[in-house]
Length: 631
Image (cartoon, rainbow, N blue to C red):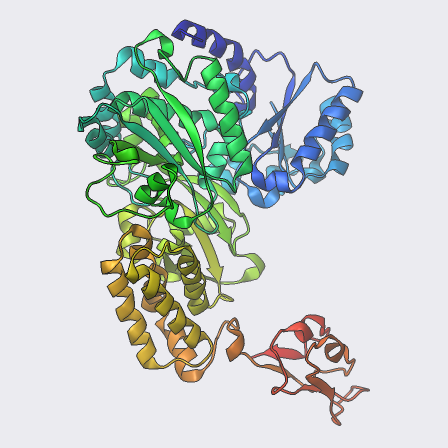
């Protein structure tokens, strides 16, 4: 594929195939496409076996020339996986199993009648089947970074080309100067999606304007270490070529001929698909020497990280690529001046790059028309925790937290009340119910003590203890600290010790003051972003849930019933039927029978010896009359 003409020929050939999956008119040689999610979540639930069974049943029923099976990336609604969608109808089958496939093949693919009991219930309206974009989860989303995820086969470069892939690279090489490319990104208002929110165009401009030694590098941060975050992983699994194309565009813009993608080794599917994509791009002349017959050359290498959270920090990431222990370096000099191997380096994360080709093709004004004045475009979030629709969502900046949780997310399970949402992972903060209507963008989140981060969004309900939540995130930070600077290495450990003391009922009011003072010291003095933001979960929970800290200290009570040392279990004797199941289950032998027989009961009630109780809660799980309460 040495010329744009050859690229356009492949696109013309493939457009009809991929168009069938978006309800557009098409000239596909197949009557139907069956898309099966091949992302990590659905794969772990058996989607590869479903694909194998599907292909076998299709062949046995004589449909091989009429139905194509396509392994895709993540569709987004992970709570319902494994997911399968049949086009052109757009019927959405959820929670698939191998046992479902023979009936779907016979009744739907052969007979033309969708099997309604296997469909996502929100798409079934009486005798009608609604389109996906009419469901609560999808209708308020706007996919830019995720536009190809769940649509194309990520292991087929021609399918990416059929959706406009590499057209943006051809455009910049043939029609735009490097300055024009940088200016387009500046005008779009795109800010870094890795957490810092630095203007992407400004970063590109700084890297372009540095002239020293000739060699420059383009790097992609695909390390993604936040608990509960899987945005970048899903892009790499579902649309790896978009990152390669964007990095090549960035290389042209700043004058670099080599790129590196730093991806965590714990993402085996993403790594495999990146390797396939790089090989395909090289074979088709889209990476390597003289791309599209121009004098621009660019190649990309993969580097696997060992899972160190600190390597998400840009200087630590580059140190790791160089083959050294991942530790941050003082700034300045910034990477744009002295980065990888001491050369000028541009670094963006996966989601940032995923926006670039569409900005080039559709224009800066198109992208800037979405979002808010200071936060343009869309943002991808991995929504998890106490939420019905766990999954991956992409929304315009400025969408309220309430919309994400109550509408897209489907609300809190089991009728529980929303308590808080953690954005930004260990570096972010907890957002309480009073801020549910805040528009989500960089500045608004910072103003209430949280941050955008890379896009993890963990939802909590009334059963969560906020002191315990702060302790959980801080434990993660302590474990992941590289140890280079004292404020992070020692300071975060002291914070954890104080929190541990409080959750055990041994804390004092003075400890709360010490906690706050130490948080601000660490923020002001830690070397890198990991240490500087580590206190955020503590500070935000102190700000909005200080009453819970006080209850732990003064009343020696955890209202949510989470902190084990502050719990006690008690049997309400009038409710006890004396079956003895609790005593049989108790590992400590702390439950025995009393002499008391409750009115209307035949057997004497049981009681718990609190001096022996280990507070495991096993008794509560087996008590059928629910006579055991947690206090």
